Amino acid sequence: MPQEPKILSTEELAAADAKWVTLQKIKWQDPTGKERIWEAAARKTRGSTGVDAVAILAIIRSESNAFPPSTVIIEQFRPPVGKFVIELPAGLIDPKESPEEAAVRELEEETGYKTTLKDILESAPVTVSDPGMTNANMKLVIINVNVPASETKVPEPDQKLDQGEFIVKRVVALKELSKVLEEYDSQGYTVDAKLSHFALGYRMAGTVESS
Amino acid sequence: MPQEPKILSTEELAAADAKWVTLQKIKWQDPTGKERIWEAAARKTRGSTGVDAVAILAIIRSESNAFPPSTVIIEQFRPPVGKFVIELPAGLIDPKESPEEAAVRELEEETGYKTTLKDILESAPVTVSDPGMTNANMKLVIINVNVPASETKVPEPDQKLDQGEFIVKRVVALKELSKVLEEYDSQGYTVDAKLSHFALGYRMAGTVESS
Image (tube, rainbow over all chains, first blue to last red; front, side):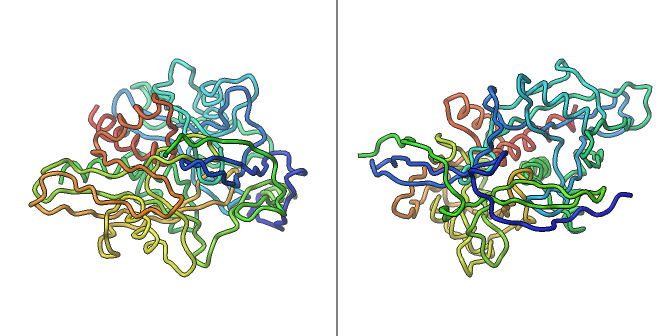
């Protein structure tokens, strides 16, 4: 029976015992020539692409305008945060997989939407998630999910989750996204900063340029 | 004489020896009731507000429309990434400081724009930067920088950087932001994911809803 996930305990982990993440002591030379130290965290799983993770912004469009342009977001318990977090579909890149292949795979696994590399509208440059703390980086891939005119509502295909993955998906009209994220926050969920920034930009474009 | 900052060496750091960051072994119970382990990184500096950092989205507006609505971004060498990164102004929250006070302080230090708590347009909910890897969180504060009709161009006040801080600021029209970030990327800079997502949302709102 499904039950509420929860944190049981948290203890300090020696970098030497960690499999997925590590700490780094970085010696660097600042612009005055002075030698300084910076402490950082890093993933140990980065492969040959040099990119840790992909996130997918699906643009779900109806050929007949049966519904407004939409995207799909996910709800997932995140142990590092100890809460359910609202994010774009995302995942680590497998060995020998390109970021774009990973995006197509993860979108199907986490949301059920089956696409191909030809549906990719844009593969954004590699960006860094929290550059004062870690080298962790990611690539956002924008994928078109075209819905034929014959479909009168947003299709909701079954997810293809791995065993041990518990992810709820939700389709949201892009123009409602900012409001939906606010509602999640007020209900005790936490929103991913990247998703929240995207939604804010989307909302602000309308108000700032027209006022 | 200013010179190019650079990484001299990187070595593994034991969690016990780290002052700013640490690693955690989190024991959690998944929705099936199974006990599982997750490895995460965390900052050691989080204070009583429960928030690690603030970022500031300044909205620089001319009362006389002498220039388009703009924001200010910063260029800064980030040792964890080993590159110059383009970000919104941001910083950690000092002890006994509210996130909003930190935002007003950091905006002035990093960009020279002097504002007060009354200029805050919005203090967004706390969001998480990379929830699969870390509990690191942040709050985006949107601050109005009003430019009187008498000023014919964007004012460029002096920064108030701490010794050892090397930050270049740049004012960008919001509608140019996405293009400017692409240019930085093509020049070898790396863009922060949150800033990049904001710019993408801002750009996409115009194209998706109108097509």
